[in-house]
Length: 182
Image 1 (cartoon, one colour):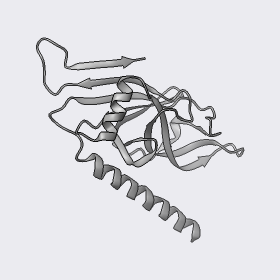
Image 2 (cartoon, rainbow, N blue to C red; image 1 turned 90 degrees about the vertical axis):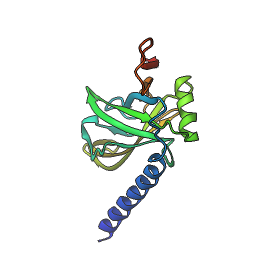
Image 3 (spheres, helix red, strand yellow; image 1 turned 120 degrees about the vertical axis):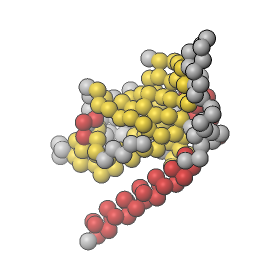
């Protein structure tokens, strides 16, 4: 009973966090401003990170796309939405759209990304299932959010590409601007 109550409480907190983030994000995407995008690596390998945890990219469960893109794991500071997640080799890749409707925290993160001042990535996992008995290796896990940070626990998780797409087709210039790409 106690374990069921704990699981229910955690699920309720996750739901409230998501509702709070989507409440902010829902009104901060503009159809008239250029759309802002990033792509990167959320989990770079099955090796342990700085927190002593390893995540199998193939074990990511409960992927509800879109999911919040946060600044520093803070649901009060959402900056966009994750629009795609895929496994490539031993890495979990993602694509996300950054708010373009005047949300100051999203604007700050965007300008930091364009200038390469911050490009670390971290994940918000939940419901962790270990498989080796030694601790820290998670073969199945839920992904609640992806975070942009100055640095994450996985040193190779990072933004790989930053670009903007105009909502208007221009005859004499491209409608997409790539600020940088690895």
